[in-house]
Image (cartoon, rainbow, N blue to C red):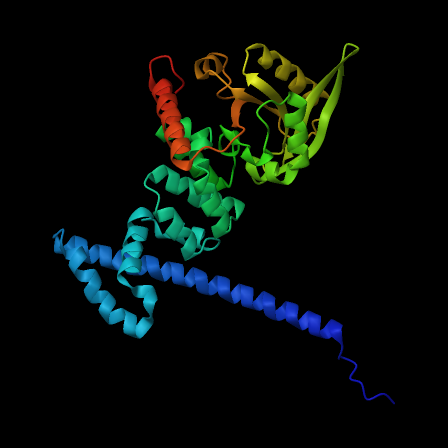
Length: 348
């Protein structure tokens, strides 16, 4: 009779390791959530104490005193800098129920990155998108560094509409094209040469599809290149076809080397009509068109109604700009778009 235990072997060991690692992950998440909620409570308590003192200097005075007493007992997590972050956390996210919901997927390190942002709507955007798309801290940092919020169509809307869409994302987990689509798209990773043709741009995207999908965002899936559509015996070819899982829509992408021209709208309308009639499933929304070009005139786009609806126009940057220059351009674009939207005759 063999002395070998019937439960020994590599399979048993592998199964037990999976159980242990899974349990550790759950415990770490629970601990992380608990720590985040604790930090909010501490920040809220200090904030109420400072408000009660009614002295502007009191906050600066109390933090070093508190920290000196807390650090020896509870560790460096309660240093002056982190206590200041806790206060900012409670001030920035005053709704504790919302914090509970966010902290189920976001850790303290997420909030540290978000709290460093100056614009309230940007903070809310990155918090909700981190939750909805389950971004890691590293991904969040990358999105912030790439000025994602300022590159969304959402950021160019009046503030009331921005808050409305973010509320829909928070309460209904509902994404809109304004949250998904960007302008501009940064395609520096394609390493295009100074003189390139449209086919070179398409080939470069196909060659580095993984990076292009990352730039498009979470939820995009590549379907087909040079999609043939026969209309009245004439063949038409769409450059790239994608599908977005959360939107449940086909996304038609038409690449343009030059600036956007009004005639491009008619071409995209044909593509979308064909896709709606021949490719759209019953459970899907109408296809969405993205005209991706080297440049565009914002007034032309607005007059054609392409700053909303099922066809959007976006530019792309073949080379990455320095971060400060990109931020400056995007801030100016947002300012002009919001001014246009609130002006007489603009969209409401």
